[in-house]
Image (cartoon, rainbow, N blue to C red; front, side, top):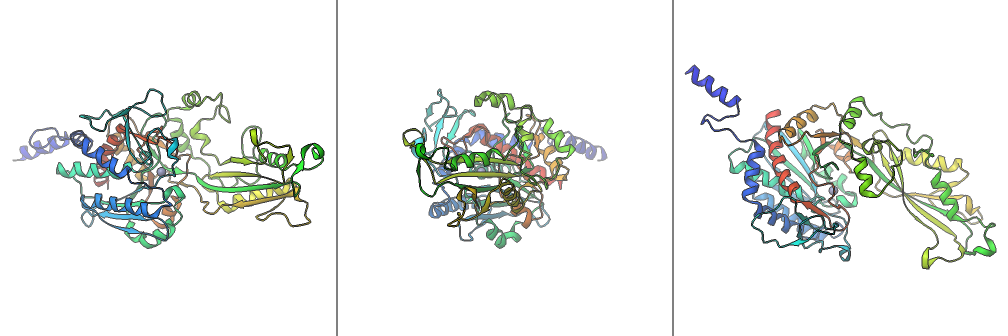
Length: 509
Ligand SMILES: [Zn+2]
């Protein structure tokens, strides 16, 4: 008897069931499932993607929410649609037992606006391609396939950003349930219908549902995988805010021959101000701007060093001779605060050029914040910087009778927000790395931050659960642009990954 019990224990330790068969890992269970049901999974993804999802169209977003509610209900989720005056959010739960660990998954189901004429296939008619349509050799395929080559791409708005997690997570649950291996874990969802607009009503939504979202860990499933193609656990995002600047010249357009050299030119004033924002090494030169920046820890630096370098490949891909600070790798550059001049406008060029000195010129700045920085403090630092250069700075235009050329109109756009970064020392980071490494194909990268921005700080303010970002999309998914796509392998891999994560988190806690 003792021998049998010990024998059973030993077999279990060896990953073998009492029957003697080698137990399948969650990823293997998921793989078998998605290989057997690929046609259905891909068809579901296609159906979801065919519902237009520009967040400003609330009626379309309600259709998307209805699809989701239906789709997840058949997997045991109860859900509700929540709105705080903007687009709908879907909040859902598939409960485990009372003391089961709880994982909260975030994804968004809206997409950026589209200009259909620029797309190689219509954005809301999902199309199967052999490769990224931006490549000359890429070809359209029929949906009617015996088997799906994992290198093929599904092209549609939100294929890569961010409709895949819902489909993949449900497929993972289907796989585990069908195999009788669904762990005792509560799965909660918060699905955002207006992320691409900056989730303007998320704070109001969280006020209504924060109690429903209590969890042990929150997985933020958005964004691309690492440029090297490796899976990554991302611990943070930069904050973001937009500031519009207007400079002023004469109060009416002047002939550039009669007045050039005499009348102050708002284009040139603007260029001077913009160039003053960085030093000749490419670093932000605004006094006080970086004062509150939380230092990058030794462990974060080590994590960055351990990542495969993508700089040479990216420079080749992008036709660049060098990056802003030669020798600085991308992952380090995005840990610094950035001021990006995202657009300049003043007078005309080409056929629209006229020989005049314009009354105004405009620029739009995008500020990317890192941990420690606060939007208000950055605005104050920028204002002081421009004042030191002799400008009068205000959110309004110049008063009548004021020296227009010394006036700078500075208008922060609403919706700016701070950065977020989970400590690299948090237990959940180590636990998840162990779980993800069980996928076996590669070692998971720990990325201290991604360069882009998400309003994760709102979850940090409203929830206690540690938050990590777990992207599933290929890095070349053309997100936000034309021909957005998801490589099928990324969809299938995500199914295996979610299966491993659900089982792993239920064991780890
Ligand atoms: Zn996204």
